Image 1 (cartoon, helix red, strand yellow):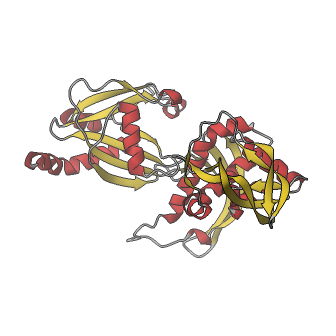
Image 2 (tube, rainbow, N blue to C red):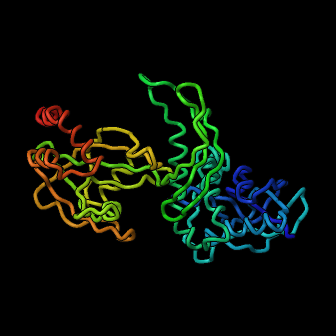
Image 3 (cartoon, one colour):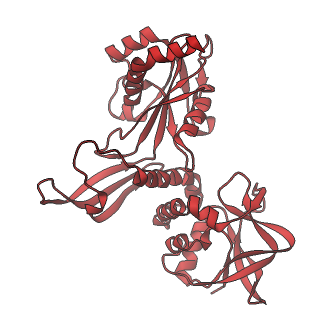
Amino acid sequence: MPLIFLFGTLCHLPLLRAVAGCEVPGVRAALRGFRAAWVAGQSWPMLERRDGAGAEGLLIEPGPEALERLDFYEACFGYTRRKVEVIRDGAPIAAEAWFPPADAAQSPGGEWSLSDWAAQWGALQTIAAGEVMRQRGQIAPEVLSARFPIIRARADAYLRAGQWRRPGHAGRHMPAERIDHHETRHTYTGFFNAEEIHASHPRFDGATNGPLARSVFRVADAVTVLPYDPVRDRILLVQQFRFGAYAHGDADPWLLEPVAGLIDAGETPEIAARREAQEEANLALRELEFVARYYPSPGGVAQVLFSYLALADLPDGMAGLGGHADENEDILSHLVPYDLALRMLAEGDMADAAQIISMQYLMLHRDRLRAGVATA
């Protein structure tokens, strides 16, 4: 089997183990004539040719199955192996390394730091790699490449939920560590995933409930934002076709909603809110007001929503078509006066949970928001 030189994220041993499926010992080595640099604006490294430099990394000798798994993982990013010569203990060694396609549009940034990358991205990438490797032999690498942003977003959401600590003013504290997890069956894998989780959990009376089998729809965390113009006293709503409403038998599945979208890996909810407002409604937001962080349907949907109300300028004529063309979005925005919005809420025109919650927040804070503009 060939010796393989690793210079980037796979030098993070938890990630290497997740991809290879086993422990793969390695020794330090260097690739002369190259330096490891961040890809400008991205969260992974590249090799840049540079005389006198030496990219530090690991030299490994994986077994046949581990090498096949590593090849599959790298193929998801379009990388293939090439022959290289590395230096180990001062002596040249023939090896191979993965390189991107020749036409890859990558510009080098600053000096690559594995420790910096691991601190921000290591756990996320290891979880994402686990989802990728589960699909080896089932889904082509190029398909997984297209799905990788949502895979990373799911991993980011999972880590974010694990760090969430609610005040606990009421209720009994029941930490997740008390749950006995038996098995997870991945019943459907696509842009979104479905899982069947088998687990037992403690009952409030001290007994054990289970084993239980429950299906869960795994999405990724999302953000919603309701734009409000306190001067003109109006909100902006977006309208689009919703498959969930259609599948449920809704007679009019083009729903009116706040601006919304999934939170990309590495994004804060606030950044995602501003990005989505620009993409869906060509709208630049001013101040963001946090409304709530909540599970929309925790019985079977693994997702948290972050809802905001945003101050914005909403002049006549600014509503219209929007949406991200690459995501097949077809969105029509509408300007709605506050009094009409109240009527829509009371009479059922607002059928989206985030819209109802955000509208109720506006009802509570409208006087303060309008007074703030009057005194500015």
